[in-house]
Image 1 (spheres, rainbow, N blue to C red):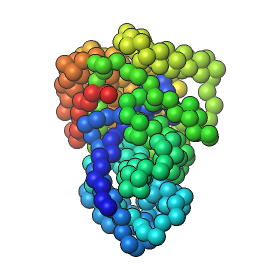
Image 2: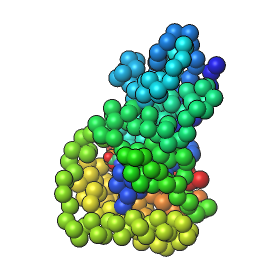
Image 3: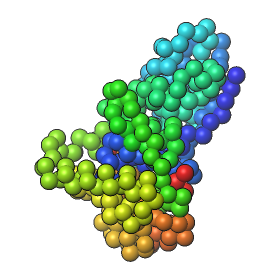
Length: 298
Ligand code: HSE
C-alpha cells in the first residue's frame, strides 16, 4: 500500500536538441513516498527542503497525479510525500522529477495499468504547470532512462537512444534560480534558416554518434547556435566554464535545460572528474555558491 521511489534529475536539450533531446542522471534525484489512503483524491502530506504548495492543483506532482486519478475509477485516494533534493529552477528537471515520481508510484500501486507513454502524458500536465508549456524532454529520460528523443508531443512519441558505455556527465549547478517560463520568454520566435540547418545537422549527427559510439562525432555535434546565445547571458561565467571544460578534455558542453546548470559530456570517469576540477577552479573564484557532480549515463 506504500512505495518509496527515486525520481532522477535529467538534462534536457543537450545543446542541439532543444525541447526534444534529454538524458537521465543516476546520481541526483528526489525521493518520494506514495501511499494508498481511504480518503479519496490526491493529498500532498509532506514536502521537505523547499517552500512548495501543498494544494494538489498547484503542485507539479499533484497536477500529474490528478491527471492520472481522473483516468481511473477507484474508491480510495493517494498520499504523496516529496523529499526534494533537486532545487526548483536549477535546470536539471526538478519539476519533471516531481511530475514523473507521483504517477510512476501510483501506477506501481495500481498494478501497472499504464505504460510509460501514458505516464508521460499524465506527467506533461504537471510539467506544464511549471514551464507554462507542454514539453517532455525532461520527463521522457526520467521515465525511460538514458537518452531519449521526443519525436512529437501530440501524439506523444518517444524514442530511446542508445549511448556509449563510457559516457559521463559533469553538471555544475550555480545556486541562482532561473525559472523555465522566464528563460523561454527571452527566446526568439523565429530563427534564421542557416541556424535551423546547422542545428538540425548537429542534432542528426549527435543521434548518429550516440548510436555508433563515435565520441569524436559527439564532440563535433555538441553545439547550440539557436538557444545558447540568448540564455547564456543569464548564467554567470558561462563562457569561462565552457573554455575551461573543453581545455580539460570534455567532449562538449552546454546549458542544462533552461539553466543555470551547465552540463559537460566526457569519455570516461577520469576525464569527467578533471572537468569537474576545472569548473571548480573557475567557479570558486566567483563568490557564487554551487554544487557539482559527475554522473554515469546509463
Ligand atoms: N526544453 C526545456 C527548455 C527544458 O529548455 O525550456 C526545461 O527544463
